[in-house]
Each structure stands twice: as C-alpha cells, then as structure tokens.
Image (cartoon, rainbow, N blue to C red):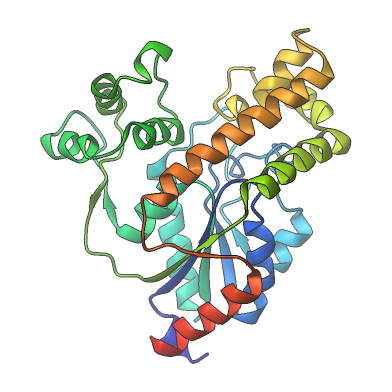
Length: 295
C-alpha cells in the first residue's frame, strides 16, 4: 500500500453487539497496516472492562487501538467528545500513512464522523428540528440513548415529544457537511439465531470472568447513578447487589436487554444503504483490498 493511498481513506466495520466486529478488525488490522478507532460509547470508560467486552491492554497495544479508557465512569461522554477525539486520531493515523479502521456498534458516532455532521451545541435551531423530523421513531430513540439524553418513559414513543427533548438536550443535528474522507462501510452480518447465541454466551462469560466483582469495585469509587454505570450489564448487576433478583434472573435480564439493544442497532444501520453486509472476515479482506486498489 503506497503512502498516497491512505491519506484520506477510512474503513468502518459496524454491526450489532456480539457480532464479532472486534475480531474482524483485529484480523484485518495487520493485513492493511491499520489502526483501530473504537466507536463504542462505553469502552471509553476506565474500569468498565468485563461488562463492555473491552479488549485487554495487551490486545489494545498489539492492534493499535484508540479511544478506549478515555475517562472515568462518573464523567459524561458525548458525541461532541467522540468527534473531537476521533478526528484527531484519524489525522494522527493518516499522518503515519496508515489506515484508520473505525470499529463499533454506536451507529451515530460512526455516521457523524464519516458524514461530517454539523453539530448544534445548544438550543432548538430550525435546521436541527427539520433534520430530526426526518428520522424514524427508533432512530430518535437511539440518538437520545447514545447522546446520554434522558427521556421520560411516557415520551419515548411520542415522536414530537422526543424531538423537543432532543432539542432541549443539545442533541446533534444530523445535518451533513462535505466530508474530507473516502470511506468504505462494512457490516458484519450474523444470522439472528447465531447472534442470540453469541449474546447469551458473552453474558455467561462476563459473569464467569467476574462481572459482579467488577461492579462492586466500581461502586466503591462511584455513585450507582454515574453515567457509565447506566450501561446494560452494569445497571442490572447494581440492582442484584441491592438485593433485587437472583443471579440467574439478573443474567437473563442482561441477555434480554442486550438483544433489544442489538435490534435497535440494526434499525439504525439498516438506514444506511452504503453499508455492505458481509458474512466472513475473508470476504471483508477481499472487499477492502479491492476498494483500496480502485481508489
């Protein structure tokens, strides 16, 4: 790969949780002299390792990960923060003539970076409202969730109220600008029955690796209402520690909530017809090689 070929290119690897995105990225990273930028709004939190399926420090170093362990669980992490840090990481990677691989399931983060979203930091601007009105109810719900904007349960299925809440919460306006990046978007396709098994297996492994102990350690340092601890897996275990439910019911709740989240992720990703859904990392390798050769 020559130096010119990587100066504006980005490959994104997206898909639902437990689809195998990180495994694909770690296979592809050395092949294409890449570096991985995590687009995961929970792996940014220090100390939240097991419950976010975070790669170990040795794997992070080996595969050149960025945007992991960025801040403490009691701090807010927003789309604004991600775009600033991701753009800086992309520039750094390009400066060394390497290929950025954006990897994660937080669709809003990936889309905002690759499409050059113009963000509205405050107030209900007219263009913000018009852009939000074009989104589906499911997409608005996901925007609110990823931007850490708390929406009353009674408003979550009311599109008009959702939009008003997003405006008040300084949501990102999904208004695209011309982007300087040349991008390839690859989706990790996994049949639903396999994904369900992967989710159950992952949750079982988290408990085996010590998720309850990890949450207890976090609670010794942070409030249970800390932004990071509202994550699926952590919230349910906090309730368990408080005496609400058994270990078995807690594990089943996490499986159910993770499946629901994966469904919302796919609702988001299906909106973007530019994503090429592939069945294997071998197919992804061939497609990336073809794309780089043709650009």
